[in-house]
Length: 174
Image: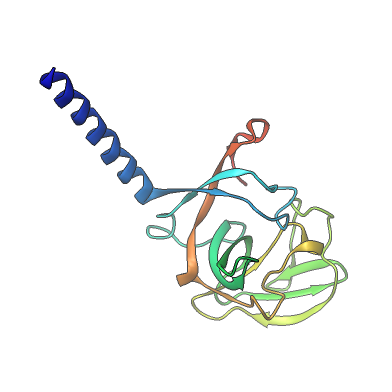
């Protein structure tokens, strides 16, 4: 009997060790808002790579989760999920329904409505910061809003890389 208990204890400790190691690299997250539709929907269950930017740089087009100063209804701070549009040194402008990065019209097939409403004068992304936007541009609070503004790379939690649920969307996130 005691041998079986020791074997069970060993197996449980090994499973816990493996889980802790995995949690250092991957963070499961549930999408709560609709600002990333049609790429991500509310209640999508996704995985973030917590180490993605330890060994590489943030790239335009990455979908990132970051800490914000916004508060939810229960008073806790919100984490937001958005797409990186501009990195340090990039110039970003919006006119005639399109986003321009470094004076080049962006090809953004992932946007929900196919256009970005409103105009924005050209801004330059400061060092260590990102310009982020939701794919559902008409319903996204993002870098266009002074409450969000440029996002510090230090606030990044991780890069979205895989959708687990719903199963019809199972696979990598792009």
